[in-house]
Every structure is written in C-alpha cells, then in structure tokens.
Image (cartoon, rainbow, N blue to C red; front, side, top):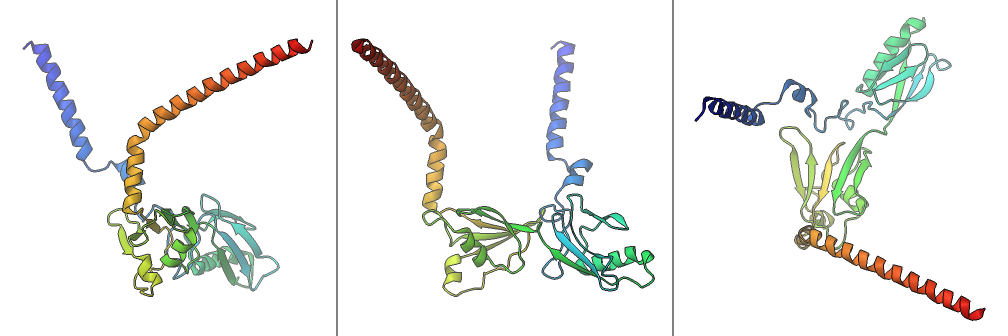
Length: 262
C-alpha cells in the first residue's frame, strides 16, 4: 500500500474513533448549562400548594398597610421575571414565595418612609400549568389551580369514548434523571377506590393512552400512509381533469346555444 494511502486511512480511522468517543462521552459544559435540572426546566419553580410563589406571567397585587395611599397597585411579571415599581424602579421578583416577596419589598421601600412599610402581597397565577395528553378531546396545557386530582382533569379533558384506555393512565412527574410515573385506573376511581386519585402538581403530565385496537389502527394508518397518499394524489388529479373537461364541454354547449338563438 502506498504511504500516502496508509496515512489517509489512518487519519480516517482516528476521525471515526473521535466521533464514536464523542457520541458516548459526557455532555459538554455548554450542554450541561442548558440541561433540565429541575423537572421541566422552569427557571422559577417551587411548591405552590405549600406557599404560593411568583413566576412569569403571574399578576401580583402589592399593598402597604401603613402607606395605602402610596403603595397600592397590581403588576404583571414579565418574561424576564421583573416588574417595574414606583419609587424603586425595575426589580426581579420571580421565584419569591409570597412571604419572601413581602419581606423583600418592605426592605426596598423602607428608605422612603419613616414608618416601616407593612407589605401584603397577593398572587393571581397565570404561569403555572400542567398537561393532559393522549386520547382526550381537549388536549394540551391546563391552568394549575392547586386543588385538582387526576379524576378532575381527565373528566374535564373528555376521554375519547372509542379510543381512550382509561384503565392504563399515567401521571408523570418530570425529573431529568428519574421521572416519577404513577399509573392509575380511572375505572377503579369512578367505582370508589380513590387510592390512586393523585393530586395534580404544576408541570405534571397526565397521559391517557389508546386502547390496543386503537393503537393497532394508528399503526396501520401510519404504515399505509405512503400508499394512501399516492392514491389520494391520483384521485385528486383525475377529479381535476374530469372537472376541466366538464367546464370545457359546458363552455362549448354555451357557445352552440348562443349561436342557435341568433
């Protein structure tokens, strides 16, 4: 083998080895920076059922008991987690619990008053959601209200009568390393066994799978799609051609009729 060919093959082998190694190596520093570290990767997360916290999209009402004429307003938390407040300007409040935000705002407003502020915060959530997916009529994200169970959310999403397998549902609670999957049988819950009527938390996924027959039907439809697409295209072309001939024939008849009258 010529020397230059041997060198070329050696380089190719080294490149291939590097590629294979990179496929199985640990994530890069940048990848780790963007990895999902807390459930579904929300920047601001907490346990709102224990104490509500502020996240982007929430409406926050701020009231000062000692200075109600100056501090009494409502603001919406922007996408960067900040709000613009009178006197103190733009501040970042996303991620604070209610009590934490009250203490923080009291501290920020205190230099402007001789009487210490006594701040009261009320949070109206807009940004906390969970998800219902699968064989339901109303699929997608749903507003998290804090007192919902799997029975509540599945019935409200309206399982599809012919395809939903309500005996093998899943509640999925995200985690980047070890997500929690909790199976539940809606039939059992409806009959009175509420052991698995789990409470919903924000960012939960409720999955309603298809029945075995529905799943087989979806498989057949996907497998036959190339064939059906071709037949549909041919049928559309034939109908278009037939329609064109009908239009031309109609025009000709119109001309003959026009000529007969005159």
